[in-house]
Amino acid sequence: MNQHVFPQTLGQLLDLSPDAIDFLVAAGQREIRREQSVAAWIAALDGEGLTHIGMSREQLGRHIAHMIDTARKAKRQTAASVRSLTVWPGRDKRGRPEPAGFSVLAGEVVCIVGPTGAGKSQLLSDIECLAQGDSPSTRRVTIDGAAAVERGLAKKLVAQISQNMNFVVDLTVGAFLTMHGACRNLSAQNVPVADVVACANSLAGEPMTVATSLTQLSGGQSRALMIADTAYLSSSPVVLIDEIENAGIDRRQALELLMAKEKIVVISTHDPLLALMGDKRIVVRGGAVSEIVVTSREEKDNLALLERFDRHMVALRDRLRHGERIDRPLAWLMGDQ
Image (cartoon, rainbow, N blue to C red; front, side, top):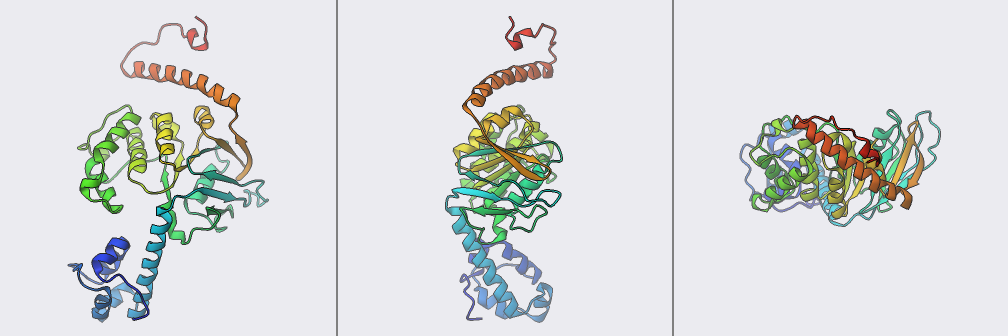
């Protein structure tokens, strides 16, 4: 066992790698003595405990050493600012070489556009798992010009906000955020629960409180909560968002919030307003990146007009929600008075 380098105690092991709790539970450890040394715990395991874990002492020692090494590398890599993410070309749905890859810099927003079924979800999936030629597209994804030190780091480097964010766990919003903070090694008093909730409420039209049950949140509220959670609590430098336009939230504010945190933001969208908010658009056809369009100054000018129309549409939606009639001529929307 001397060749393995461990933290001195079980408490230090769990602080560095919370996944190690699985071994303690599997070994029948009902009460964890944080002050017990890791080496002593392994040495004291009986045959039944080792059988439940499915490893010999030597194998367990090597596995824990690997977990610790991975956790330390993850801490170093996520602590350092990620400057760029690059997607290298793979193959399209017919097996032909993909025409292009692309890079995204910290603080940039890149939008993925294309018809339904074009392969936008596969591209998001490749980024989420830091693909290394082992996905159906055969793409490779690198961070700052190199592959991630461990594929398991994808969970720490990439945060994804999907279309379906409804919760099934029976917790209050406050308890959920406190739990999330604990998973990220924040003490309860250091989790900015009030700030996250206030931010979520500014993104969604329906207010929530720290006492609101997660199961009572609407789809829009759930998405707003997760965006605020990602901005305030997540250390992941890469954020993937799937069709934020369906969430009924303030899209510009959500993007500006994430951009202010210097995160790499990749969004799959059908919304022209969102697409023009991005720095560039990745056009997907037939399962491949077919074109990269840098947002022009003229498109940014048109974005200002689209945002004005969008504000009018938001106002009309609010009137409908409050039971008002939309019976006045709307020609003024097109500039005709």
